Image (cartoon, rainbow over all chains, first blue to last red; front, top):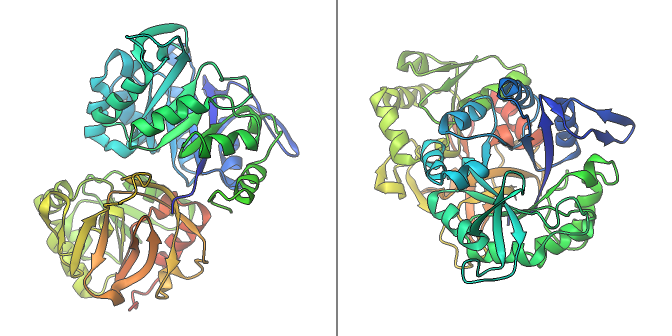
Length: 258
Length: 206
């Protein structure tokens, strides 16, 4: 039986952590490579690097980060942010990432999912979607809409329909990030996560709102997620990977305990 | 020196990085002559059976691998390298290398909650002790990504099993060949320890 996975998300800008990460006995590390290694050593199941570099001339720095992480971290990790073409995806995979995350570029150009899936296999292509709660309507029957550009632009795409389409195009996993819950640390959007998890057969990773182990428990059970993505609850040093996993394990979830 | 067989199969560099981390010297090659004369071989891979077999044949690596196996070279298969060593794969009805008799079959879970591909961390139980699996404890988890699994004809070729709706062989071995369906190079410290065991294995298995 598969274990439920905990993924740590690190935002990277110009090769540095966009938000500093605090560890027990260590303060504010700006370099993503040692941060990744510490989470790996603490028993995180997977890592996600999200590149929020604004200028294209600094994008090459990310590949150096990916390559340095791959030399020290021996668990799967994915890279997202600014990947627009199969060639962009190929570069981060060759640098050592297991998977690519596509989001805005996939909405603008859905064949990107199919092309990347054919080139690298479905297991390497993660469709990440930012979702906003809206009034249900004939155009948006689920009451959830896909937004892009960091949540600023509405697309008119229904989130459940887009998830199904992404799977049909060849995405091997889907990250469901609730814009409404993101940053609130008040819990994941359970109804949304469950709607998506029941609509597709690929693994679903819940994102946005995780603040306590209880929130993870709820989304991994009631929300039917296969995995949960965490950021600030780890980065601020409030919880360790071990504490989160032990708490979920004690409540009966199968976790990889290291 | 570990020789990693290059047949355009994805995780070559991940395996190389893991060996570098363990300070085990390695080289990547697509040259059949180098495969024949290798001291130790890794046959990695991510991908589809048919495409993998096509590339192996086009490069003359299928024959080289069979010769190395016959000579007693210690060989480690990973993922698709644990599948296409059997006689046949259900994936695209593909005739395979036949180092071990048996077939590679697809997961067909009755429970819709069990997803295919089987992707993520799962516990591996050693069913027959093998030098490459030395130190693996009950409950140790490894990272899997696959839709098909190996089913050797001889049950004694099964070294470890895992559970995904069905109990399936997670590691198989015969003589100087050992293969894991899971990704040693992405399974954290326990995966690296199995990789190190292989680097020190004399090829005398079962």
